[in-house]
Length: 111
Image 1 (cartoon, rainbow, N blue to C red):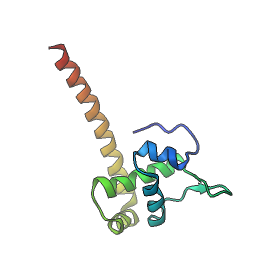
Image 2: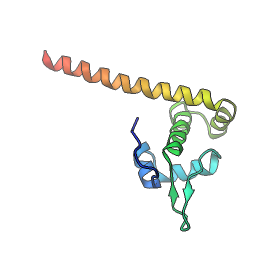
Image 3: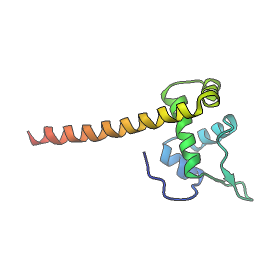
């Protein structure tokens, strides 16, 4: 999981961080009421680190679990904290897996 150090991120930056198209972010903003980036007078979107974590949760439900939009909305509506906790646990496990794989690769290169 990336460490988010800025207060606000533009849509292009969020798309790069999450490795998804900006068009997907705009679509999800229309579909999920929990995604509400701030906008300036020109309509430019500004996402907070909290917004990005919410989008990560949506990404987990839609792209990783394969839920349809309405099913993901239902999950968030009725079990937001449970979905959030599950998502965070999976992200931590992925990070541990990557670290362990790196250690294994280092061990194999020593042989």
